[in-house]
Image (cartoon, rainbow, N blue to C red):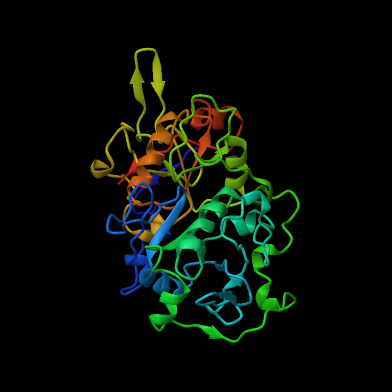
Amino acid sequence: MGDTFNAEEDRLQPTCMRHCPSGKAYCTRDVYSVVDPNTSWTDHPFHTQVWYHTLEDIYKLWKEDYFHFVLDIRPLQDVPLDDGVLEGWETIHIPGSYPINVFPPETPANEVEMLVDFTFGNMCKDARIFVHCWSGIAGNMVAKTLIELGFTDVHAAGPQGSAGMWAWRDAGYDVVMGDTFNAEEDRLQPTCMRHCPSGKAYCTRDVYSVVDPNTSWTDHPFHTQVWYHTLEDIYKLWKEDYFHFVLDIRPLQDVPLDDGVLEGWETIHIPGSYPINVFPPETPANEVEMLVDFTFGNMCKDARIFVHCWSGIAGNMVAKTLIELGFTDVHAAGPQGSAGMWAWRDAGYDVVMGDTFNA
């Protein structure tokens, strides 16, 4: 209770705003989606909630360990064709990749049985994943399936048809040839499949989206590429440091109304939150000027972010704006109208009151 905001304090300088090392792909990478597609990729389906990169960017990001896991949808063994063969994972694969063998790629989500089972739990489903196949076509289909299975950070290469294992090999990128799959080896037991501690919210949390909405949230707009949780889950996840940053869209000072007031960040806020002051919430993306500028670079834009306002309505609008600005892991609470600062305070969750901004 009773805090002072000083923009020069380390605690109010998010780590993602530090200088990005020269030449790092995660600083310069481009990202595409159904919201902001690459218009030169003709005949490339952009699936909702999936993020896309050029294969060159994928390779550079992979070299920097940007992806937690690489999932290879191909079978272990070669698949014979009338005019050739589709090489399997054992014949050639990306170093460190995991064979999940979702083949044929049209397999419905409720029938998927992965060889290395990344559906084991939410720790796997929340990891940043690159999924691929031979050419990119089947991999893109399975990227959509992963979203239907509850994965929240799925990346694929494009344009499909020239963005898979064949193009990777032909570009001279790193490969492993002639491998043997042994499910008992530690290298094929991803860390996210370890037992999730009892009672941890990140193990049990539910997540909703335009692909899998909460049907009880009437009049709640589910914006493309945004992930939604109940406010109770948001609080529990926040307590476990699930979110890298909490962005508060409200102004610093109270906003007077004819019948009351909209409290500003200085009056009350979530501990550790950053005031970005995107108000009014209808501000177009190209006109947004954040108080604490999370548009600084891709390190901020790729962080897992929870964005909120007073009731959830304005926060949900700005969640959509963040996606338009290139943020790739945006979370909001729902249903809007009862999932913001007011509901947080009324639930007895942690708050800071009486803060002062000092630039």
